[in-house]
Image (cartoon, rainbow, N blue to C red):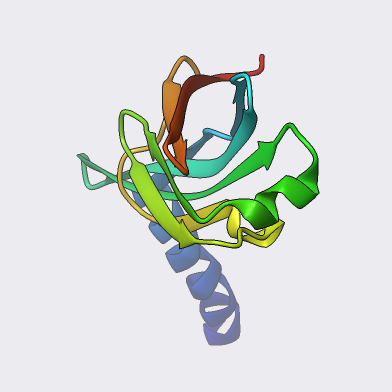
Length: 145
C-alpha cells in the first residue's frame, strides 16, 4: 500500500504545481522592409512575451532579438570610396546607430542586438537615416504582411 501511495504522490505534486502556475506565450516575429533612392533596409525581429499567472497574480517576461541590414542600391564597389558614414534607426521601442570610417565593407552594414523589454508591434514603422560623405537619406521600414 505504501508503494502505491509513493508512486501516486510524485505525479500528484507535479500536477498541482503545473495547475497553479499557468503561462501563455505570444510571438512577435516580424520583418520590416523599406527603401530610399540609394539604400534599402530590412529589420527582422524575433520576440516573445510570456504572461505568467501564479496564485492569481499576473506577471510578464519578454525577450527579443533584432537584426538590421542595409544594402546599397548602386555598385557595391562604390562603398569602398565612402570616407565617413553613419546610419541610425528609430522605432517605438528600440533604436540604434553606427558610425563607420571608410572604406565601408558590406559586413559593416549590419546591426543586431538582443535583450528583454518592449517589442515592436505588427503596425510599427521604423525610421532609418543614412548619412555618408555629406549626403543624407531617410526612409521607413514597414512590416510585410
